[in-house]
Image (cartoon, rainbow, N blue to C red; front, top):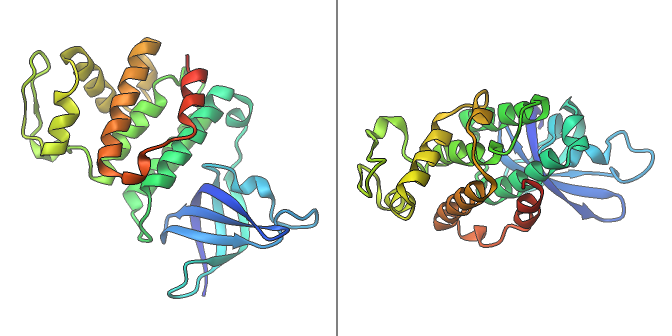
Length: 241
């Protein structure tokens, strides 16, 4: 059946001589795999650049029931990347977040709220002219809400920032705070409570950002077994100094 949906490209693999298989997080169907036939040939209407990490696309595809691979008929940019392609800091963040999402978004079921969060966040990254040093940290903390691995506001969070006591958290989330010093817990909560309009207003040095990033990654690894190695992480650390 021919269906239209918005999609966020996670990554692609070469398939045959001219085609690719792309893993895309879609608004209507969750994570799905698509074959883009002939996209690597010179005369293809579909362009390979459409399938770069975190590209926002409108796609039309043939969906087959009980199939793990669908065929793209047509795809177009929702928003071409100009600043992301030209800014090594932004492109490094995109590669890292695409790898993170590829390892955490596994369900072939729609989640409109999570899709909307990711879709809007990528647009902010493309359009912002503010410092993006905190962007990936804010993204990961907010994403954890949608993934169900971080307490939400309705869980009556009671965080004692000046002590080592944390209450009203499930065990795994208790670890998230109990393993970190009080000043860094305060930084985490400031990042968690800020928005994509205010993330640049929090001033952290490079060492603090790297420390918080390692801590957040450890928390993701606690919940996702396939998070043991992030190939893009060394590049991100080197670029966002």
